[in-house]
Length: 334
Image (cartoon, rainbow, N blue to C red):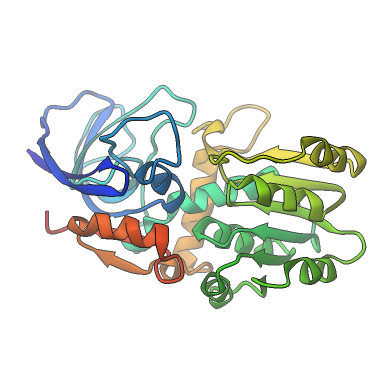
């Protein structure tokens, strides 16, 4: 069977390629006809523009997909005809396979009441929820979320739903506007220090969250966090940065801060004894949010496009953040 897929061929260059996929399956495999995939702007742009080191082109990007199962092996919890969310690169037809990694690629049946386009945001929601779940949250806590990309907005809204007083911080005015349109009460894009100090009060923030992966922003999170507070590192640091580590460590030490690494791939798929934090549990929570539409993820999506326009999509997400926020590929015609 023929499959079309997005391929990164060099810095800033991408196209749609094709290959043949064998229909025969092993017991831990599924054949899936993709409907939609979402570009993960953080992870994928780091590869599209070589921000992440240590890999070679060509690269197949993507991991946020929704489609219908054509065939499924007997060891999987899905069957023919199920609409599923699954982790796989952007492609029209995917042979999905179970992995032995801690998180493993996910494949989960979706409630038919959930819009498949909305469901492409599932991975973004799972990442955001990991940061929220990792921190110790109490009603009325003051929280600052630095970086209002897709995951940042979702993170801020989740903290707000838990009864926290949340402010989102981003230098792009349009992102702050989108966050407010989705229900976030407070944002700031200029006069940051004065506004944040006034918002947090004399005691500082109880929780600060970095969703940018920029070391300078992580320093800001540490600076604005109050005594005995928590600093959540939800973004993946990728770019080199020079600074005074002693000054940073001193603030952590003197304020007795807790620094929490929130990399999503460290939690297990299934629940394990002693912990309720698992991908299965988090998926159920995010699925409920999508079904109830208590967080309107459709507002995150700037446009839905043909995969042939992939190079322009990556360019817009990289260089025109005021116009392109989140882009979905429509594979139904392939």
